Length: 331
Image 1 (tube, rainbow, N blue to C red):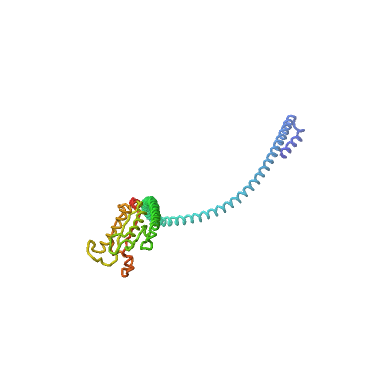
Image 2: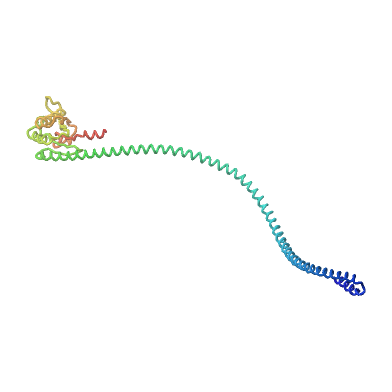
């Protein structure tokens, strides 16, 4: 640019020596140069500004480049570390795969053992279920039988209760009858007559001396009165049976006639008592039974006279009618 100004200045200096036309040309040239200079000056400023911007950008880029280099160095280090870690993990993975294969191989054998054990368990379970069903069937049958037995037991308990009630009524009736008989025959108490209650029965025992002369089968007056007093108490009883038993001592029967031995004597005496109670005392003959027991059921020692006297006796046994009891028992 300075070089152009010098040329212009020299041209102006020489202008005095050149024609006006040339001067004008030079002047126009100068103006053109000035304009060109201003243009170049502006362009220079623009380029200078651009250069400064570029320098700033360059500085920024250099800083960025530095950071990128640092990042690249860090990332490279991380990459190497990661690669080493990957290599190590890959090695561990291979080892784990090998172990997994071994475990699977061992697991197959264990699984087979487990399957065999499971199958055995299922078989055993099925057997136990079958046993359980069988037991349940047996239990149901037993429960059914138990219910039947409980029902039967209740029925039996009701029957037992009914029996107990009947027995209690019979016992009460027998006690009451025994008391009435004892009261009616109280006057003969010290004359060889006893009234007892045993096994639900009433035993009226009369020694032979109260009823019969020695060896006789005919009842005397005192004995007849005792029998009629007894008959008067029991003739209205419709729910008893009367067994008249004749008993003797062991002395053989002397004499001849219809009676051959003590059997005959005991039977005939029992028959005499039955006739008086029926014919004279009004006791229903269907209630009466005569029996001879001879010498074979003694109540005392036949070796003494006192014992023989006790063995020579008539026992009148009053037994309650137990038909209803037997009916209940047979139901």
